[in-house]
Amino acid sequence: MFQKKNNLQEKQKKPRVLHIGTRRPVVVVLWTLLICAFAFAVYKNFTAVDTHTVRETTVVQQEVTDTNAIESFVTNFAKVYYSWEQSAASIEQRTENLKYYLTDELQALNADTVRSDVPVSSAVQDVQIWSVEQTGDKVYKIVYSVSQMIGNEEESTAVTSAYAVSVYADDAGDLVIIQNPTITGKPAKSDYAPKAAEPDGTVSAEETTEITEFLTTFFTLYPSASEQELSYYASGGALPVIENDSYVFAALVNPVYTKQGDTVTANVAVQYLDQRTSMTQVSQFVLKLKKVDGNWKISSC
Image (cartoon, rainbow, N blue to C red; front, side, top):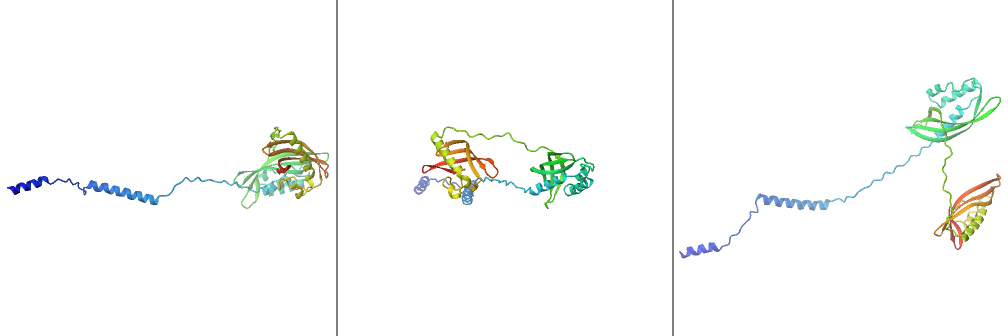
């Protein structure tokens, strides 16, 4: 009885421990997810690729087309097209020569442009190409003017007109006119006028006198000066060497001086008498001047 009681007390004193089943499915799944996430983070850390924004710059290189052949072709065509004499033989020869320039369709179109009984003759004095513009695949539009001397037995008259033609250039470099000479206008004088230089008071009266005297001396010597002589007045390469004693200095025309820092800008026209032609030649210069060791010197042009 006593022993039974002791066993009962021991059972009551032994603490109860709660065990959570580590093999339950939910726990296994959670541990699996944690391990996978950690492994993925490590993998990404080692295989990460630095990314940066790449800005691609596309350089468009303008293709320059040699149009000398086209210009020569049109010039030669114009000399044939606008020249004839008052004879059936001349007109026939003109028609024959045009076959080397015109398509068959245009040859037919021009069959009667100059009749055999034409009352005047025409001699081409000058052909001037004004523009060459590519208007399509291998097609070029050429604007040109032609000066003719139109005459008969009694008198002659100078005539100048402007026209446009279209020329096709194939891969072999062969050319043919595909549009007949069409009346047009040639470039005229533009109304543009650059802003004139004006004094702004930044150059003192004393400096103005010094610079004018310096430029007068320099331009008197400049045309005939050697490279070594120029080096006393201008930095190397500031002005080209002329070495021509035909130009005789006459005057400075309306020099304008402005100053920024230690640099003076001189806008000046220079008159020279050309002894070969007896013409007064006026040259315009924009010069940068600085004082070097107390003397004015041209630094750039």
